[in-house]
Amino acid sequence: MNEEITIGAEGMKIDRDLYRSFQSVVTDDSTIRDFVENMEFENAENYLEENILDKPEEYFTLQKLGKSLELDRKLSVSELLLHAFGHIDRIKSKNECLEEDFEKLEVKTFNNEVKNTIKVDFIEEEILVKPIDYYYTNSIARSSKVMSECRQISKKFLFTGIEKAS
Image (cartoon, rainbow, N blue to C red; front, side):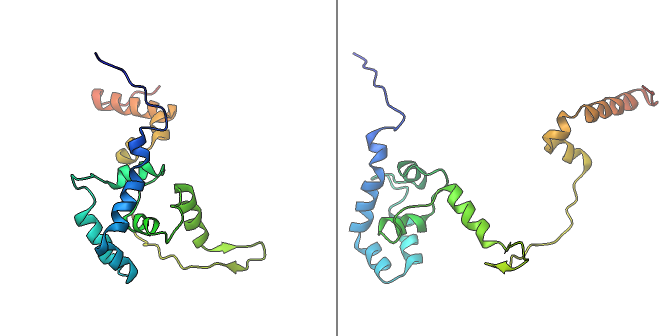
C-alpha cells in the first residue's frame, strides 16, 4: 500500500532539527572546541570543512544548515561556528547585511559633516563593451520599439545592400 504523506511549508522535522543536531556534533567535538577556546578560528573552520561538513555520516552542508536556520542567503563557515558556540545569538538576514554594509559607506548630513567615514577604494578602469553585447544584456534596450526598428532597418540594409528610407 502506497501512503501519501503531505509535508507542510515548514518542511520536514528532520530538516528543522538539522541545525540542533549539527550544533551538538560540533560542540561535542573536542578538537573544534579547543580551537574555538584558544581563538584559533581559522583552524576550527578548516577542521570543520575537512572533517564534518559534506561527510556521509550526517551529511551536513552549508546549504542544508542555512535552510534549517531559515536563512535567505548563503551561510559562511565562520558564521556557523560563531553561532554554534554562542558567540553570536543569531545569523543576520540578507537585508541586515546589506544595511550594515551601506552604513559603512561615507554618510554626509545636510551640513556636509562626515560621519562614520570609511574610505572605499574603487578600481578605476575603462570597460570596453561592444554595442551588440550591450544590446543583448540590456533588457530595456531589447524591448525598446526604437531599438527594434533600428535592428530591422539594419537587417534590411545588410540583406539588400541598399538603405531603404521608411
